[in-house]
Image (cartoon, rainbow, N blue to C red; front, side, top):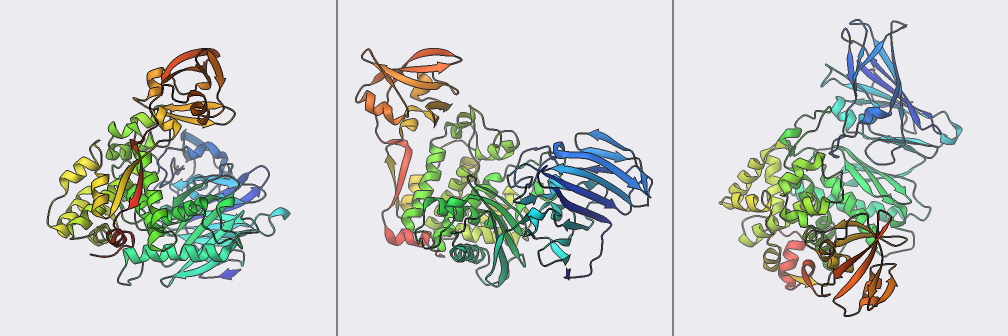
Length: 594
């Protein structure tokens, strides 16, 4: 063992073993050195950063307990609370299994190739122990197939071997819950960003991975973020940082943590040896890295007042996700431009994509972005056929609110959004904040109130002044021709035919009577029937016709629906962005201070 500090065991101690790779379960023991009489334990129902009650306890099996060598009866009180029939004082040892077959960044996974878990899915919490430190033994799998596995986590190592297995420490349960664990025959690389040690761990990468390029680009992103938050060279609020990247055949996502992030990317999108180009997939991955790293400041430290202390047993509501997710979404791609990983045209293409996602969502006229934040628990992670018509994304519209605020500030010449973020950090001491704090900072930096803009952009459902604020910074917003689905007011899945997933409010498809779940088989025109394989076939068949009869299958019935075809012209819901004044645009895009 490599000992980093005395290998003491805390009063709260876990042992986690990848017990059966093929049955996909972890074996866990949890020792409470000084339990109360009738000690209660619980498992979280959600994980920070992913605002949905996920009921992790449904994966917990065969919970038992012993005290002084004797079996202690356990009684389940509700879906995620249990009570031990134990006495006070003498150590209580609980043991159980956790089924791990969720390949996302939110829960736990285990097979013969890789293990991963978040403590919210695996580690019971003892009631009455808030704020107490805990230790964790992460045992190496005994299976021969895992002989080359290593272990990586941002937890503080106490006594670990050269592969990373062994004992770790967390200051409290919240820190444990915020420190995912990766186990696999991964590759890794260490680098420094502004003097801070960083580590990049990658599982599942193809042999052609250009690790050197990925490290260099990740370092550039980290340095751009540190420079934004700490332009005077002060140290960032962390002494180390860990990227855990799982490369898969088909996946994408990330989850932020205080000292690390867990990422999933398509392995085809990773840079390859001998290839210098930057494809859309790699840009998307760099944007994900940038997004989750920016969260190290914006939501993991500077965070909603409601998140000052997490309640793991129920929803934690806030109206501020438009700020913490939306502003982070604004900066993630902008930092790629500042780091010189993409050019102006590529950045404006990404920004136009975000704008189009909002403009093509009728729900923006129904739900404010503040309400979308509050409703995340019941709406964002549970999309259905009505979602585009009844909701707006606090990610995308929040990013546009940040854009409007940044460019408005720049036009007035008193401050930039960078200044606002730094001033908020100082005002709130890198901790909990409210909307009132944002308004106070804006007032202090500019000498005027911004209540009306926040009321209109955040709490209202009107259109954002995108064209105006962009023009003031030398960028032209121009209408563009929509894709066929948007022209018709549809969202479809084109695989083995045309399957309607959403019908947008007010569009031609809704007026014709199409609905989600329909299979659009073909059209009839001038007494002739035509099969449609993709929506692109509609233009081939219809030509300049203004109306066709759509042949639709629904509930094993064939329907004939009269469909008016809108003209294929540019509209207000599809835009492109172009540099009109290079000098003014550069001041914004390069992050120049006022």
